[in-house]
Image 1 (cartoon, rainbow, N blue to C red):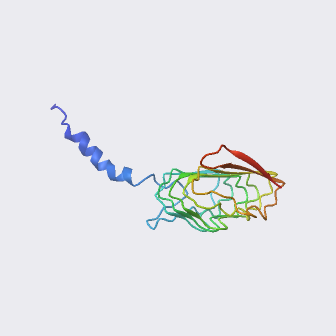
Image 2: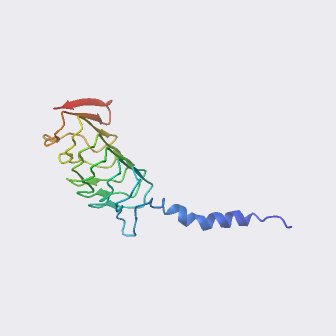
Image 3: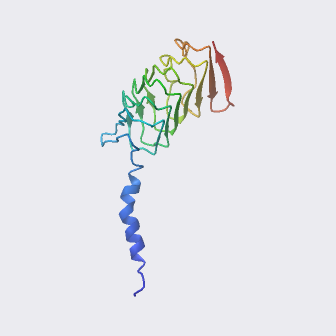
Length: 190
């Protein structure tokens, strides 16, 4: 047998490089077509958690999760390509209790009505994004007694507009807010 040449490992690495640069593959049951819009059609039995990380998508479109009735948690994180979440993206997911949108620094816009009719939602976390204004949470309609909204490390959000929580039918909302220079504050909003 001859000695292995040092070029073989380098060649193998070069062949795998394009696949690594494309980002993570789309997890089942989702599709990530070349147009950059995510689609996760349902129904899907025994799918309770959906983790979407390192995705090569630009948009989470309206009705992206339609039919995923058993899902209780959706996590979107580490996706450098994501720029926008459209209205009704999280719509009518009756068992969904947690949404985490984290470490998506190129996410600059969440359309009004992106979070709609989520009666069991307990926890919404939007952290370390590029959004410039507080997302519309007035159509969530959670029936959970203690709803937690965590907004942190979104350096472009500087104020909470008046009536930001109008229409929420909870007994209380706990807002975990972190601005650039201050520690997390908790606000109770009746």
